[in-house]
Picture 1 (tube, rainbow, N blue to C red):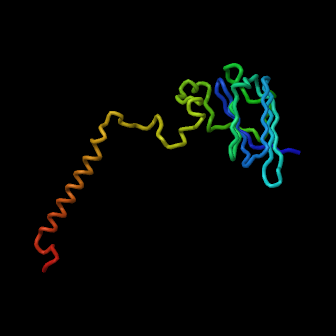
Picture 2 (picture 1 turned 180 degrees about the horizontal axis):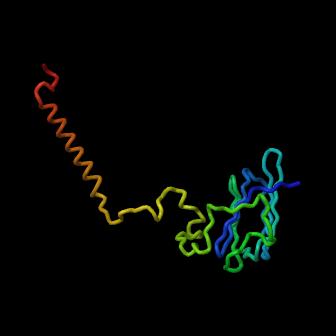
Picture 3 (picture 1 turned 120 degrees about the horizontal axis):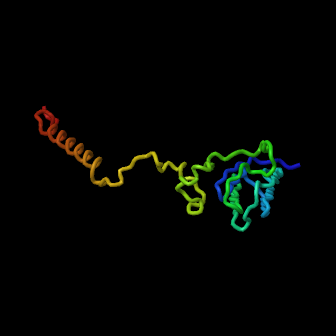
Length: 179
């Protein structure tokens, strides 16, 4: 009997992200049908423990524009929706989702916030730039500031003061090392 790997999902109006967490997966097989049938199977570990997922997605998908990436720890599937609309859930079946299926809050954007998303997943390969510490909308940068202004002037003043102090110390009587 197969096990079910931990699986996360998130969506936009035009696509669904499915991330299967299975380190060192071998013999990975992915299948996606236009009506939304999704199937995954793989093995892992020295004992080749089998893992499998088989579910019906909420609505139809565009198989040709969907793509998968198999990494060392995760298998990511970008599923292109047939129609640009928000799904009320990932699975066609109503009720409580399986325990191994969770929402991927790192990729999730609410329907009303989608228009505010400034990064396009196609342009940046789906990479989440918010985790790289590159600053965000709340950070304030003075883009018009001259790099020669500001801290450099203060640093030069400190160097000049230090040089003046050293000169005064060496020229003062009794500081040159003689009695």
